[in-house]
Image 1: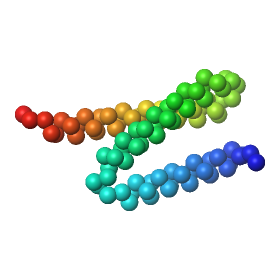
Image 2 (image 1 turned 120 degrees about the vertical axis):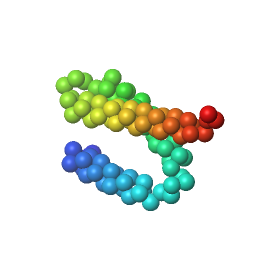
Image 3 (image 1 turned 30 degrees about the vertical axis):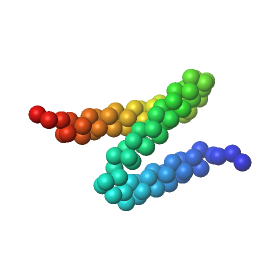
Image 4 (image 1 turned 135 degrees about the vertical axis):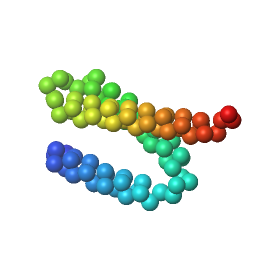
Length: 95
């Protein structure tokens, strides 16, 4: 059984809505562990995107575009996570 492009888009949209609902229900005390898990998953996405970009023929433009988008979004998520963590740690420093 192979996925058509429409099936893949449907799965991505469904996962996005599911992710939004899951994050919306998280208690504020669990945001830091959730951010750590999110950074770990984003690291896996970045590594997978890099491997996909390296092994894909340049004529398959959709694969390159989606892999590049995954690389960009994963990088933004990790950078934002480090920025927020740095701000939180700065709050606990003595002046």
